[in-house]
Image (cartoon, rainbow, N blue to C red; front, side, top):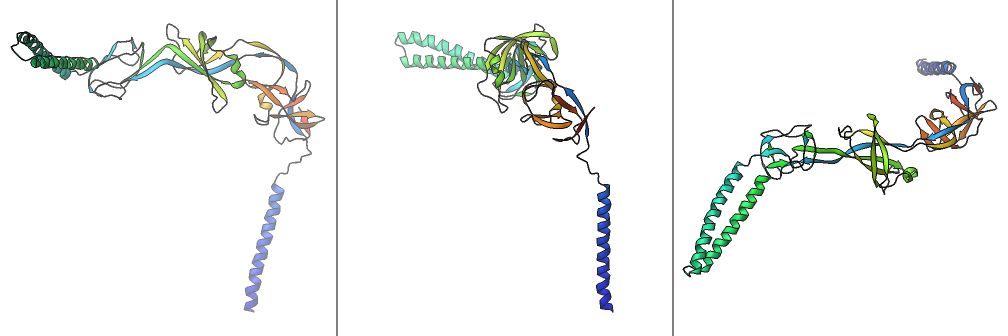
Length: 349
């Protein structure tokens, strides 16, 4: 009897589990919403017409300084004075920093004393050599010693001149990287000087538009921050190698305003003259459901949504210009893409 119970009880428990699982499955099935593909989808649509299309060529880029450098000392030494601050306007050759040169000046005085003594020796040995009172070799040694001392003096004077760090060109101090009492050494940046009186403006251009630019030709350039200021930019460089996006760099030389209104790092655009592009099929970019490589959209034909392949020739803001795939009078779906598929029944609102 006990053996029978050992068999019957597990079988009953297993049966209960199976029944519960089947009940849960049926309950879940009833709760899941099943979309009826035959039901019409509510959509918004527009009838397409050709429109006049004005081609406004503009290419965005960045303003860069014509010249910029970080200054460091050519010799080691303690900084005794910093003569400028960040934002200071400086001229070429203007002193910017002064290093301690007291030891070098003492060495220079010592060499000058040696030179005085050697010059006296040369005069004395010259007279004695002419009178055959001394050997000529003594005069030669004195003359060589004088030449060596003069070279030492020139070396010390050059080192002393390098303790005064001057501006290499006209510009603005855009970074102050040291203070009085700091130690200067070759390779350690102390100041940054930037020249924005002349600017470089660089854009990247798709290969299809590269023929719009020619070197030594002048174009209008505006900064995003100052659209009322129109600058003249001369094309100085048209890239010969594309980047990973298959675009080419084009660079312009620009003279800044007298007030230096445009700053390095600002964004701007090269504006080309507007031209009439004629009538084009222009649609909202939001209507495209395919990728940029394989654009597609839905048309309404006989109450159904038909997925259509198109070709896009250009984009402007939130619209695109379609070159092939559409005809005037086509009804294009512009909204209600949820549950929409190729061949779906649609109800145009």
